[in-house]
Amino acid sequence: MFEHVEPFGGDPILSLNEDFQKDPRPHKINLSIGIYFDDAGAIPVLDSVRRAEAMVVARNAPKPYLPIEGAANFREQVQLLLFGAGHPALAEKRVATIQSVGSSGGLKVGADFIARWLPGSEVWVSDPSWENHRSMFEGAGLAVHSYPYYDAASGALAFDAMCDALRRIPAKSVVLVHACCHNPTGVDLTHAQWNALIPLFAERELLPYLDLAYQGFGDGIEEDAYAVRTLAAARGKDGRPMSFVVANSFSKSMSLYGERCGALSVACADAAEAVNVLGQLKFTVRRNYSSPPIHGGQIVAAVLGEAALRPLWEGELGAMRDRIRAMREALHATLLKKMPGRDFGYFLSQRGMFSYTGLDPKQVDRLREEFAVYLVRSGRLCIAGLNTGNVEATGLAMAAVLDG
Ligand code: LMR
Image (tube, rainbow, N blue to C red):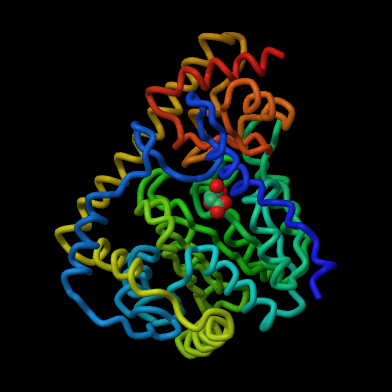
């Protein structure tokens, strides 16, 4: 029956992380997977999360099936976090939100929804993008293409080339854009660039699909939601509110990776449309995994909704963001000391957990084999894996590899 089944080639990120766990070298450094480690190299349990979990456990509540769309308090808090309290899109009830199994689960439910209801549409992802984007949309049966995004020569955003490409793709194409902290490059759109891009989406009748997995790791919780809030206030070519999709995650921002807490929101033209869209998202979920799990979502809802916990979480997220910035500066300083003639300024201008180093796969392999420093083969380095104990060794290893 299964003789013909081919072996799985492994995942470029998750398999590397598994290889790292098996590496016996004590000085090994994991800069591969997008996980925030603290200065001691541990995945933190946030104080706000610990207290929220204690509250949830103390309720001693039964564990029925959640509604297909997830818990009402979780979904409400997600909408407030993404769109901001008082946003007209929420007041007008034109956003359909479901609790999802991580933002990956949300991305895939959204992809299935698009395949069913916009069957002629094809998807465009940035070049480069998170390795799994293409695979997920293709897995939903959609054709996936890429648009220019990163200019390797300058290390900056290829904004003009990106807009030129988007001007030429068919109407109703789906355009996957990272709302902040672009994975893998760390190169983001400025607010001014978003302001220029959104009318282009409207004029060309494109469907923006935002991936917001790192809210709070760029410039701040509110600042990183700029794309969501601006799109939600924009009008389409027909003068009606613009439609778009956003998948968001709490894996990183609450250090809740394994709880798989995320959401998918679809902003619609009006409330009646949002009712139908929510219904079809529910149908998609029911056919896949029926309904999401309770526990993690209730922790998230408590962190976001309890007055005593929210400021604590915001402070903890701010501290993670600041530590990442400090590590960017430390790595930059080490490299500059070793290679003074070279421009490493991109480490300082990029945002979020990741830096695109420009190292080629051979150099990345050398880093792993000779120095036990693990990066994704695209040259992506997870800054959040650096700490005061390993940043210098990382800089020295990178300099050795760059030197040839
Ligand atoms: C990453 O990009 O490393 C993370 O988002 C983890 C993953 O699932 O790939």
